[in-house]
Length: 504
Image 1 (cartoon, one colour):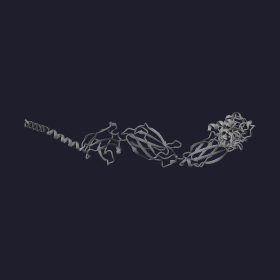
Image 2: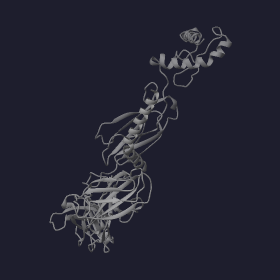
Image 3: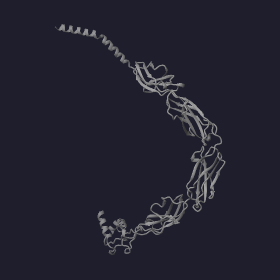
Image 4: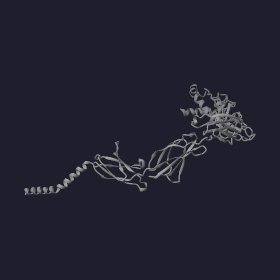
């Protein structure tokens, strides 16, 4: 049915305009009504060809397919309607070295717009015009290239209709922002003041109307809540003095230039500390928070005096008595330190911590001496096992890494949670028998070496199961069986002889 309708419609549409039809595909001949005003026109059907019933059924299909045929089959050679009038309400803003423009569609024929053309160029003719095409359903556009500072640009937006005809454009002019300020620096720094300077642009090469200078104190303040102070400065100003500042304080200072229309240049900024009145005192209360054979962790408190003047901490590690040091820095807010140099067991180390101020002056030393734990024992193993006891033995590390005063032996039923039993074994011994154990039970056995100040080595763990009582009963039965076997053999032989003789 659909195929028949399509063939019928095509046959109707191929009739010339003189045959009584009024399609708009015959411009100037048939004044048929337009569907959309852009060249898609409605086909009028005469009753002598199609009756009223067919006309009613095909009306919508005729309109649609006629529109498609007009647009795509014959549209290449036919004018399809034009946009009347330019875009409306064209407006734009500059963002430093690029711009964005917004507009509204033309007041007439906006549905016939296929695309928009955006062109821009310096009004002084210093560069060629750049044009791009932009899709019709988005009524704004960002410039894609970096523009010249302090330059007036003309921007034109023109609608393009379905015949690719460009309508009259709307235009506006805008000026880019000044260039980034150069040469911004601190010339003098004191505990309570900063002197700043920057370079002025060459005469006639800039559009700077004024400057904005901003600064903020970041010390003890989160960046998200820091309140900048701001001062406007005339265009001929090239220096400024910040006074009444807090000593040993970090500031962020930002300078921008403003153009004739208050366009803002890119920011020029730096971070700077005000000067030091008095250096910080030494760090306090250095203490060991963790210590093993190969590592340590220290904690300390900041200087009590002039803590805000601390820039960072310098930590130096060395073998006690050696002149060779390994030094590192840690951030101001750090209050802990983990060793960086490779350590050996049973060795004395000296750690020095110094605060350093913003002028890179070190405070007095604060130090601590650390004695690392001995290395852990080796080859922990069991030697004798019974139903209620386990004998464990072990070997000591090399003499240079042996400084144990005692051993701590721990055992517990494994797996599972239980109350661990602990005993101290003299460093003169390398074996120990654990008693009062349960038969047929798995035990975890853990051994630590204790060095000076009872600092423990890393542990060594093994597991062992005690013997079960049934093994002893079987063993006793076997012994009894071996003892009775000759007698039973003799008795059995005698009974067999008696049995055979009775039968004979």
